Length: 118
Image 1 (cartoon, rainbow, N blue to C red):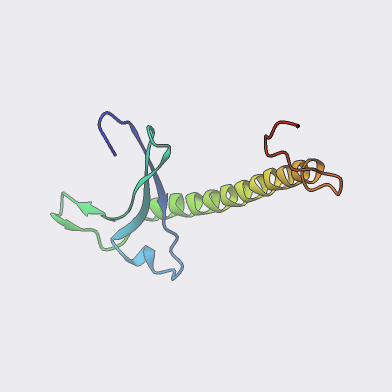
Image 2: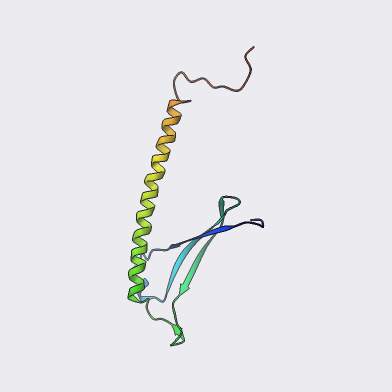
């Protein structure tokens, strides 16, 4: 990255496949940092976030139930969005393939190398 540049930062909550997250005091996020100038990923990070109780001056023993409910809703939404975008990508790839079949993948297609006729 070079200055000046603007970045976009995207976070994804990493799913708890083990089912033990509710008995922990931390959760993880996957992070993608994109360069606006380069239009490509600039960095990929992982964040460990600990829930801390400042009144008791220590980490919480468990993630609160209302937080777990939100995490479950977010995991479900992330999976739905992943599937929606997979379908969208497949539709775009099919359209591109159809364009290829209509143009240069035809039996009578002739490649034009840009030469002038003699």
